[in-house]
Image (cartoon, rainbow, N blue to C red; front, side, top):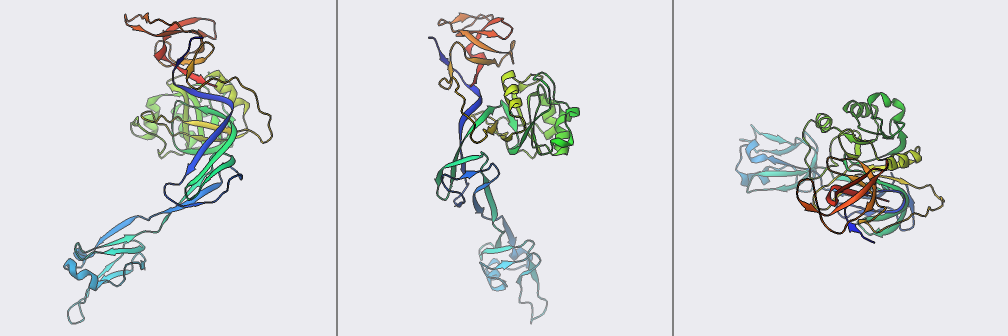
Length: 374
């Protein structure tokens, strides 16, 4: 049977999901292998070094840098509070003394007789890593983190902003073609992962911010709305650290595009269940897609699914058109001609035949489609 390889987004009603939760620096792992954890449970923690504040004591006291150590009232390693005297000159015959006070609280890390600067180190910054995936700890990495595993519904989006968020799935639209507008959101959706159909409007996003919705998931979004929401043009390298109150994920692309029916129905079937979402996207080296993960209920019988190797394009594979003039259309591969064919532009390329839900058949370049992986 003819087949090829092409990238795609994974949309699976049940898959064995694994994730690594690792600290940025060495720390303490709080859970053990075999333990069950919730998505919001802290699995590891550490402390990052506090912020550094330099104080130019030599300039402030009008001293030669070499004289600064003699004027210090505190030694390295000692703590000083904001507003507390840090150094004092000897004055003239005990009079006309000048003081230098700390602007911030911290610990004296160093005193330089070369530059006359004192370095204050702020309090350590706690870093806590949440489980994110509600499931079982299958591996403990001492001092670094854990590997978690769970059976879950797993859906990848095409683009997102905002980091990790949690909440129950709530459907805001009746079908995948309805736009996610502001009037479809209400106060009862606070803390939820709200699912729309087609384009999410800028007004809906701003209302979601006000309500406190954890995440919005819909088929598409206008890039002008995104620019207005952020206040700047978003770069294309990496997202996920934007200062937004609600994580946003689009599953199909920019514009007025309906969510794939399979994706919409899958999310609707899990309404009310707790979901973990991550809007982080990276579209250069090391592709990272935004995702929605919904752990399966404990004890639920495993469903047998037809599986195929990742990235394999063959007859029967569901695909999405990713370039004009058929952008956004979804169908199933019906044929993979082996020989390159002449396109309308006059160039030659490898093509495939796609059968749409309407029964219509299209012949398109293979580079113009992406897989919808089960």
